[in-house]
Image (cartoon, rainbow, N blue to C red):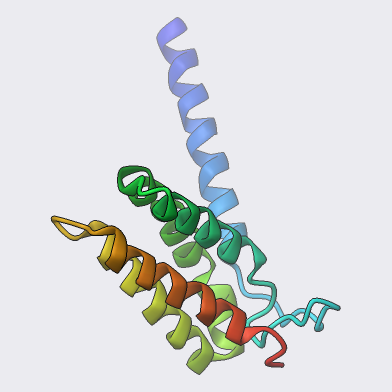
Length: 134
């Protein structure tokens, strides 16, 4: 009986995670511009915040923690693709390329602080360049 309860609990957790993932990535119309100057892609605050966290870790030369934290950015960005890419595909591709560059810099076999910092600075500048583009 306990074994069956554990299976049911795990299935319920997996179903909840799946539903949350689908909801996070679902398409919706573009949000109206906010006072902060949202981009054509909508509110990018969540993604930029994670990138800023990674950049802070890189500044401290904590590249192992940076590598772990940038996985959060990759997951959030990939999950949201279906909902934000259709809003402005060319802007999405520009940001996606910058995200990929940052991922590569931190995941190389021997990452350096200088290359990682440059990639993160470029990524943050790319996020900032999207503000007000609506």
